[in-house]
Length: 188
Length: 214
Image (cartoon, rainbow over all chains, first blue to last red; front, side, top):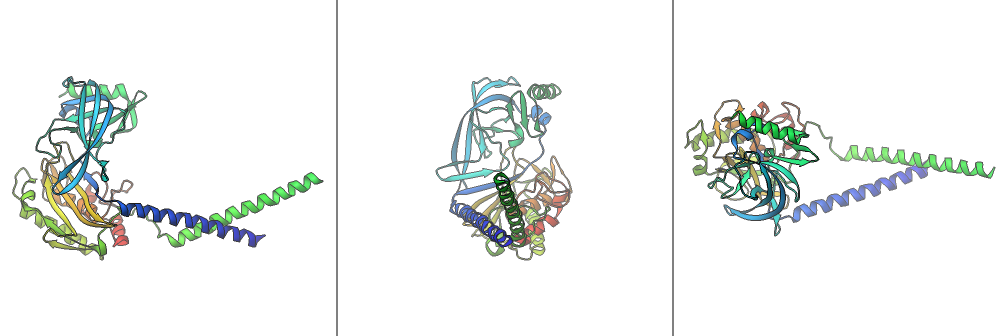
């Protein structure tokens, strides 16, 4: 009985090992096949909600309608940015008057070219969000485009009456976040 | 009687199954313990690629380095290069299998150090892994944000007062293949995402990761 048990154990372990090694090999194979792949790591200051509320022109509540990746040539390299088009529901600052706004983020994938950034906000279609938007800076990598101020720190996902994002990873009641932003701005 | 016999059979079968499961788990654990190097919880995570045989070099773009603000003034390329060369030496002297040659021309494999306007509300510095072949880097690029202000030997990372040597340590860590260490205890890694005093030098967790890679 014991011999049978050991035999079964070895067989099962071998099967698990084979599956694991095969997975590893296929995983590596996929990785090796990736070309035109750019990975970006960034170091950031800590942007508080109060700081962003007081120093950015727009605090947009909106719904993500479209995500369009685009390739930008940068000193001989190709890097993917994505343009995020949002239906504007409200600008908490009252400055933005258009029905839609387009903000650019770094990262995306198109025509076999991929850029991954660990500091940019990520968006999903039909996601409801609150974003702090920086003014256009023509000489910057963002060009003639708005971008999310503080990158990932300047985006909050709005869901079921709560807001989730940097500083409030476990969530804050959406109305409390809006109140906090308006209060910070009033102190400006 | 028949029913009891059936129960005994089931019991025996269950016992055998349990023994098999326990033995399998024990045996698999043993195999894992033997084959996988012990993962120190403090060890900094590695990125998926690295420099072949630990060999690379640094290329400085002086015109771009002159655009970096040091204490509110510009044209400090030579001073920045001197600081970065100290960082390079620090890495080479700490990690035995890493050979990063000094100031050189832009031929692969290499790390390019310069600057870009990354936006007033953008990153402080970014490291981009922009060219590779298989698992090996060919070119990495470190860009300081021209919209931020750095200091030399300020030993802090406050707004408008970022110790450029601390930042160089962190970015060089990325450039040789270290990822952010999200779970690091204080002082065990210079690769924590938010700047702190741990960025002042290569920490034990970083060294362990680089030694395992190179």
